[in-house]
Length: 136
Image 1 (tube, helix red, strand yellow):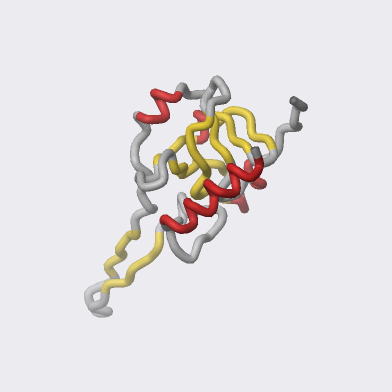
Image 2 (image 1 turned 30 degrees about the vertical axis):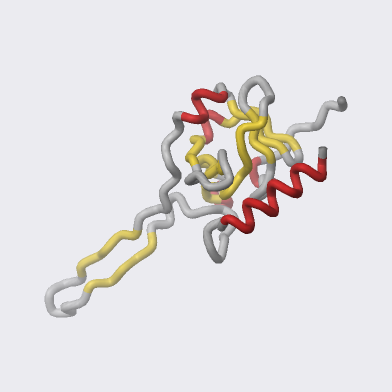
């Protein structure tokens, strides 16, 4: 087994393998959350099962990142206890009464770095699973 050099969080892609602190596989990356223009890494949305809801891993719990693999500082049990990932909320701004309108603005604080046209669906997760099996 060869050692891989660590890489930046900017290189993480959907479908990369996610492992716990001992190196046991616990899921795959769904989305990368942060602001690439200001180099702010907030965390990851990961899939821990084919049909389960994505879990949110704060950046503080992300250990070493190597090509195709993200190691967490959490145990497998701790990963199972992570909260569900929720899309960033939208915010509403009320304009002065004379304007009489309500304008919606997207919250830009925790937007995904890699934009996805749609959330990873079941077919995409199956494709990621087959890709991981072929790499072994």
